[in-house]
Length: 400
Image (cartoon, rainbow, N blue to C red; front, top):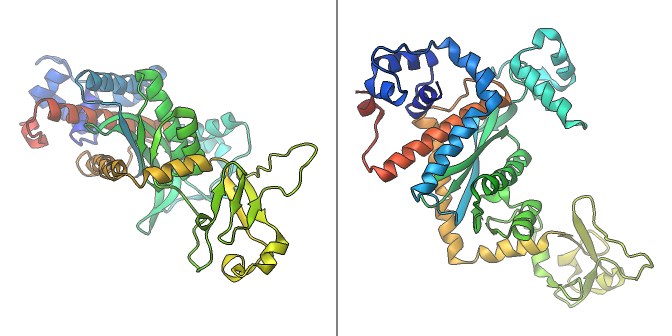
């Protein structure tokens, strides 16, 4: 049955009833599914029973996906030198006109809402064991989906996160998450660690867009994993009102202070305490500030801090990793990485236009997980076939 599902996702056959009809008539499909001419094709109703039973209990789809990645590695399609990461929004199977307000979230615990997707959502909330921010709009049919807007149109959706090897565009890991930037960034760490554990692969460089350029993730890549971040830095310190930005101040690592263009120091503390303090804020920054007396006499005060008594700079505890990313952005290798990142976008376009996975059929986080894994498996198989047997694969030719 897993082989039948792979055929369906490989050729954009979204209906399981139609998939059974195609396998019944197509000899190539029968051969791939190891069915003889007289063997009966499984009924479409058995897919749901197995999917929610033994397939999920054994994590069969993950095992199939990883076996395909292993085969790609043996064929030399995975280099392991550079990975690229990105996420794409996929519509959930939820009516955008039906929603429950945040105040009515507890109503989902009513037995009349006890669908599989609702049970998964409530189980995930209970498992976290800590207060969470409930979305303002919740779908009663799929509460795990997030209300999001793309190109002005809002709908419920999940995100599929791809981690690919840039040599041949093979997907080395995939993760389903709510459509939240924080969840997508967290998925990046999960995928990199899982690939290292399962395949003993750790990239020398990671390519991503600015969504992956936050300070915490950069610090993790540089300091914990030793991965070169080919990622634009998420930087809110640059000013566009004509006043001086943080980059106009010179950092002195040895003195642990900034120097203004006029040579005035900005320090995190101006006197020595008996018990040293970290000065780290809740935002994981350290505030450096100038002397108020020096600022009041500075001829550049109108361009530096016109609305405050003294100039302050919030320096991230991961600023050294951010500097590494900034320096990499000036290299020729970074320019090549910008081109390599398009390989992820091509896969997402192929996913939605050719494989027709622009809307999920299954509900709940587990349903999104299953669909994204099967689709990624199908894409890897098609990519491997194209590289090893360079013949154009067309669904019409394969079905004839």
